[in-house]
Every structure is written in structure tokens, then in C-alpha cells.
Image 1 (spheres, rainbow, N blue to C red):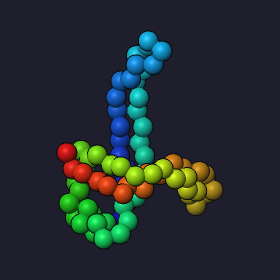
Image 2: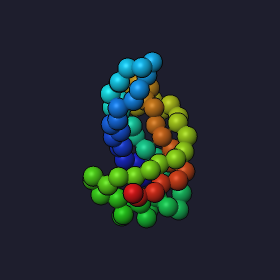
Image 3: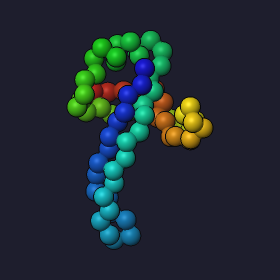
Length: 74
């Protein structure tokens, strides 16, 4: 199962405020994937923990993907 997470925040970097915005594909595998497929709805806020990996789409373009090993609905 996969879905897209959107992150928006404001961070302080070298004394300056910087807006951060990113969308990243999250992949959930294993036994919990089916459960999350039924439980998650558009707009749900989640905390995801796992590892980053690079994949290539069908056009050979590299993308960053988060493989979620732990997912918590907030």
C-alpha cells in the first residue's frame, strides 16, 4: 500500500525563517498494510517512522520514498 504525505512547516536556519513544504510517497508493507488501507482517509494526520529509499518511476526518474515501519494516526 502507498499514499502521499504532505509536510508544511516553518524552520529556523542560520537565524532566518524558512518555509518547508514537501510531498513524499509513503509505502507500508506487511501485515499492517491492509489495516491502514481501510483506516486512512484523505486529510488524516499521521506520524510515520521508517527509512528513506530511492526508486525509479516507469520513466527512469528517481524519487525519494519513505518506507514506513511505524505509522501512528494523530
